[in-house]
Length: 154
Image 1 (tube, rainbow, N blue to C red):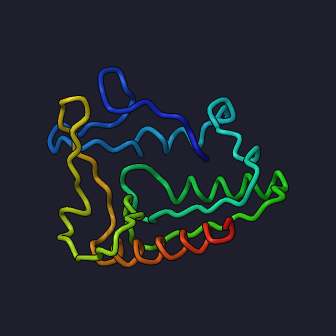
Image 2: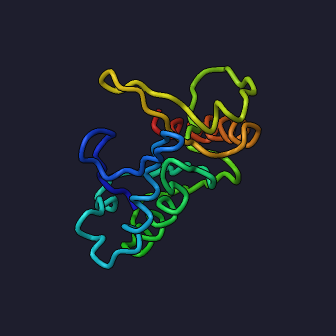
Image 3: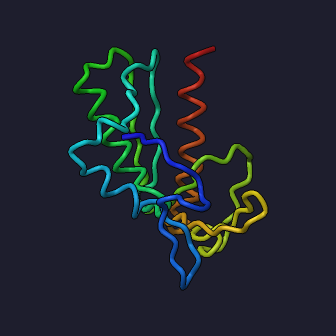
């Protein structure tokens, strides 16, 4: 179920582990997915006017992308969505699945799991999850699936 979230910064609801200084949105999102009032902040994906491809890593530690993708698929089926939907969940893969370069180097698992980003001059660390090998293989498959999905629109 897609939700709209604020970015890192003052007043945001994301989890910050003070010992490791790692931001993890999943601590904020998971309870929302169980909230009875979730329709108030759910994006009505059934209003889309075409096929939908969902790609997620089962071990995404940034947010529960696999759970959210499954909820999107379930919602679209309940609403009798007239266009195609393809939902692919990659086991043991993390957050960053799409990389459109012919570059499939095996990075250390530390790189895959924790990535630093500079946002408005402040450094943040995000836990992406997934093992290096599984995420690398998922990236290859996700790229191929995405290109195949986009080819239908030529």
